[in-house]
Amino acid sequence: MMKKGRLTMQQQRTLGGILMSLPSFLVLFLFFIGPMLLAILLSFTNWKGTTLTFDFIGFSNYVKVFNTPNFGQLMFNTVYLILLYVPLLNIVALVMATLIYGISRKLGTVSKSAIFFPNLLAPVVVGFIWLILYQYQNGIFNKILRGLGIDALAHDWLGDPSTAMPAISLSILWFAIGYFLIIYTAGLTTIPDDLYENAEVEGANRVQSFFGITIPMLAPSITINVILSTIGCIATFEFPLVMTKGGPGSYTRTMGYAIWNYAYGTRQQGHALAIAVIMALIAMLIAFGEWLLLHKQEEIY
Image (tube, rainbow, N blue to C red):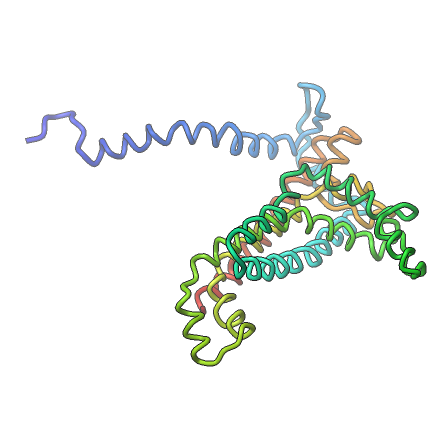
């Protein structure tokens, strides 16, 4: 008979689990949940970021965000960058991962390391590298074009509204593709070789095997990569900041850039945090929509 007041075995296990997870929860609260709640709270204030005093002003910051003349442009630029960057990144990363996975182990390891290397650099450093490459007079791209005798194609890539955002998208792709390539490569290792051997016996060529086996079996990797690349694209600000400063005009100003500008340029931390909250909600909605769509495809496969 169990003595009164003594914990049962199940209660002891539950209590032990709580005590063991408490340090992790404290770290999570200190570095993630706490700052997130504080940011939401401060978005309802006129905090300038340099003082400990502030006043609560309700939804004024949010009203100000939607009444900002270029808010529509910020949204358009952010969506435009997503449409440029996310599909191109995932297609290129998937194809490269498939090609690298099919070569020898040593050569594949070297290739993956070389492609992943830009991801080890700070985004600001990568932005400056591509800023130099895109320069009109001395940029490598225009020098190559002039050297080939096709001066007419030399272009002010970052100064033209029609090419500025694609140019930034290409630089982000070079920076991030190694990270997503590794995820796709990891997914490829889980595909049984028997499937490809059976497909070959049935007369399928490599292209048919790629679309009939590789892509369906990589559905979970595609889902996570699309969601991660979308969230990263929405939050990016370093590349527009370094490469164009949001120009020409406001054609490359994204929501991430606007947050940085209001927070550190004009010292309107409350306004910046209001944009950050809106951006987080938009990212969550888009990511959830992508998950629903792609998860259905996983179930079909």
